[in-house]
Amino acid sequence: MRPKRIVIIGGGPGGNQCATHAARLGAEVTVVERDIVGGAAHLWDCIPSKAMIATGETLGLMRTARGMGISDVSASLDFTALRQRIESIEHRLEHSVTGLLESQGVALVQGSGRLVGPHEVVVDGPDGETHLDADVIVLATGSRPRLPAWAPVDGRRVLSTRDAYPPEELPEHLVVIGAGVTGVEFVHMFSAFGSQVTFIVSRQQVLPQKDPEVAAALEEDFLERGVRLFKGARAESIEVGEGTVSVRCDDGRQATGSHCLLAVGSVPNSDGLGLEAAGVDTDGGYVVVDHNCRSSVPHIYAAGDLSGKLPLSSVASMQGRKIAEHCMGLHGGPHRHLDYEKAASAIFTVPEIADVGLAEADAFAEGRKIRVTKVPFSANAKALIANDPRGFVKIVSDPATGVVLGGSIVGRNAAELISVIALAVTAGLRVTDIVESLLVHPALAEALADAAE
Image (cartoon, rainbow, N blue to C red; front, top):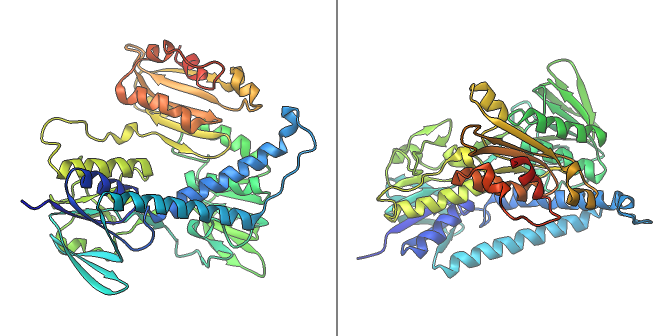
């Protein structure tokens, strides 16, 4: 009996995780990728941005070294060296992912894949067309930045997010449009590099989908950095002049800088995939999937941004793993489905922001009874030792059972610390389970136990 043939279009986190896991389970797997194995969004967006943020954080540490008892410390940004560092990280990660796929016997085909029927994929590659027959097809083509019609993006003065990792030159004054996660990370990193930044947000707070207390902490940090905030202003036109970019808002305000960057969301890469020909239902360009990530065609799955679920690499990777298990018959009986409401997420500003599970504001909006406890890092010994007592830990729990329902963290290493709360939320642990854990002292994690107590 021949092995099951699985063709995956897209080599990002969802695609490569599905590929390696399915290959270990005995499938014959082919991955089609047109750009970079490891994922364009992952290696061109996520990893470069975090590398830039890490550089900015190091600059910040050097500038505040006097608070640690160190004198005569100076530092400046080498933009060329930063670019080389990012390229080096990208190459190493791509090589690592490619090596893992090849070690599992996964075939790699370069080019753009499209469906020409429910069981056939055609790849338009450098050497012409390649036809692939498949028992199972996995679509993991990701997304790309949304570019409004009124924005004359040229990659030089008016930038999409893909143009800014890093841009050709360090902006003297960057105007950032977009109140979400990507926007605030850009505001943070370029203000850390020394650029003047104006931030245009259409709502009355940055991060409108996050806890207002978390957003307020970030806004306070931005103002301390000298960031100019335009809140409640929707950008509607951009005019490029001689060395300047002017953004006009719907309330009459205007922001002028040397560069402008748009971080106003993304659109799915579903164009040209042949979804209609294969009978795959879509909604706004996203593939409609069930709890097993199956499309309207049972043997065609979607993972990552294309699935219309949470646009997180961690979610895409888990979707890929679940797809491999499902299509290989491992989910015949009861099993744990993906619960997107329990996915942890982080924003890599300084201080970092992370959250998971039920948010305090959402619980109140639903009229749900909860217990909320909060502990500032200013009461934590390790935070004081590190000379960074900013932020807090907040835990949301059920007052009747003590079960942890969610939490948010603002502060140093929040992206790491949230894992403890995420585990508690996923496993249905109680606050007493955290309190009674014997944690390291001194450690930032002690604030978790204090908040749980």
